[in-house]
Length: 68
Image (cartoon, rainbow, N blue to C red; front, side, top):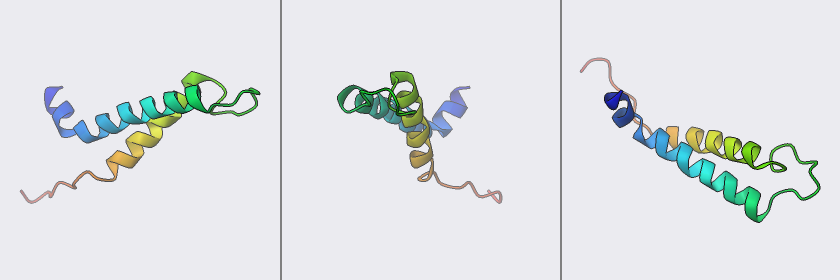
């Protein structure tokens, strides 16, 4: 478990930062009418932010070479 956490620390950081950004977006901007699917509820916006943050930060991970 500890090895997995160390190998994926960039992905975990992206998920945490994305979730925080999604929550702050809902809190500061959000959708007041309730018709927006993502930003009308805090848990939707936070989950979407976590997903986007994880995908964004996972782009910067290095590929492991199988010959080592």
